[in-house]
Image 1 (cartoon, rainbow, N blue to C red):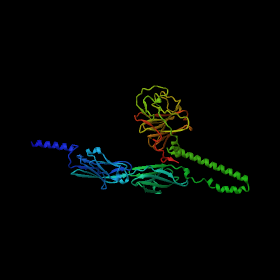
Image 2 (image 1 turned 180 degrees about the vertical axis):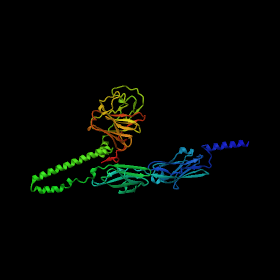
Image 3 (image 1 turned 60 degrees about the vertical axis):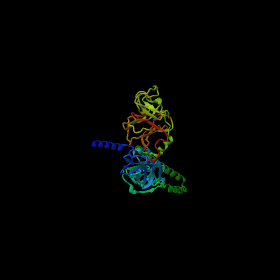
Image 4 (image 1 turned 180 degrees about the horizontal axis):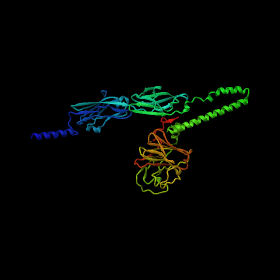
Length: 491
């Protein structure tokens, strides 16, 4: 008999423990031991769990920061501190499951502190302490030249919106640290965030300069490549030209023909020096572009040339499905029931844009995402679209492709391209006036490849989403990555 009563009591206790409507009594509060980290302007949840679940009818939940009440709810009556109004809430639908966590939105630096999770019933009380650490991750550093050309150039690095204070590190192109030569100021803004302003003097041997903002485990950096001409003082010819003109004026008093002769000679010398400097400047620009850097003057023209490009489903291979708005294409890996027309590709899984270009400059961007293969470029109207035609410029195709994470330009022979990272957004820039087609990585403004000359005729944008199922999307103006000129660009 006693054995039977013990078993019945055990079953009853088990039912009461796991019942969501357990009678009020003793309970515990579970909160994390480690600090919770919130990011400025983001949202963060301070976890707090009642164990076991208790009857929520007369439950009172109170949240405090540094022992000051910021959120209280009892009998559906909510009280919120003025500093937190519109920014804090609990998960009401989760309270009957024991979840009394607090969500803070639009986090600010002053939210940093120790929070107390209080849960009270008519005859019981428990609390748990949670530390909230707040960090602010600022913007990528902006580099600019702050002095006129000379033997030394002053470069400034700026970045805003950090918390706590970040550190500034300067390096040159061969990764040698130059921080001891810099002067840095870190100032606090009205939002209690820190802004960085650092300057450094560099010489001709430094050239490539890197500004790194270090903030715990987070680092952001920007590069600038300074051309040799910035370190060249006024040329010797121009330096002495003023005195030479005085000499000519004095000489003119005695011999005008001689003065004219000497003037012409000097002018020829200046023109020769000018041509020499321009030649050196062109060579330097070619060297810079070969490394992937983009000139500010070149990148600045691109946004003004943004073209409206949509996909033409009449040209799409039967395996491809084009979205109704003409911006997305996806490979379905099986032929659709579509008419076979002279415009449609029947072997290569390509689709063309509706718009054609014969003159002017045109730029569009494509979100290729993290896919392993794609084709992008242009094709001439007269190019063959049937059978497995050669995809080379000689056949009217100018294409860059990604295949198994290997990037290449379809030239003769094929050109393998080396980049620091595979781009997820690709910009295509068609200059019909110069017969040139360029490709760029939109995220970091890095030059991928340029077909120089011969890109002529009536040209259509070309797209291929590859074998993966994810859509390839044409970005419209305003959706593309911000066209700032801070990263990997040269004046």
